Amino acid sequence: MSDIQQTVTRKDVDGVDEAGRSAHQTVREVHTRSSTDAQSTIVNIVWFIYAVVAVFLALRFVLLALGANAANGFVSFVYNVSRIFSAPFDSMFSAKSVEAVNTQSVIQPSVIVAIIVYALIAWGIVKLVTISSRKANI
Image (cartoon, rainbow, N blue to C red):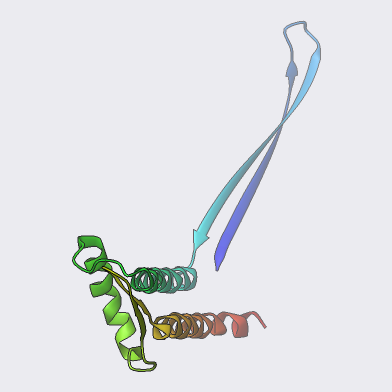
């Protein structure tokens, strides 16, 4: 994980001040350096990738539930990107749709399942990466 190193330097100085009196001064300097190892970087990358996937899937769920216009550029972009991640789960449940005058609202529970499954996969990868450091510390 992250390694924080702190170096403390103490310097005592004896001398005479402007009035001719004897003076003693102690100077203490603290230097802190932080370094991140490869394991922390991998863990952070895994969680970042999961967060991006989960955000796209959550947006897909909300936009479908609200019956967003698929012809809109942003909605189309979200649907196209999130389709890659929701495709393995799409046939899991039958989608429930509600039609209004101009919109069709669709509830896809498979998107929620996808978010949970991807969270478990990310958690498993993080555990595999961090398990070696726990054995080394024992």
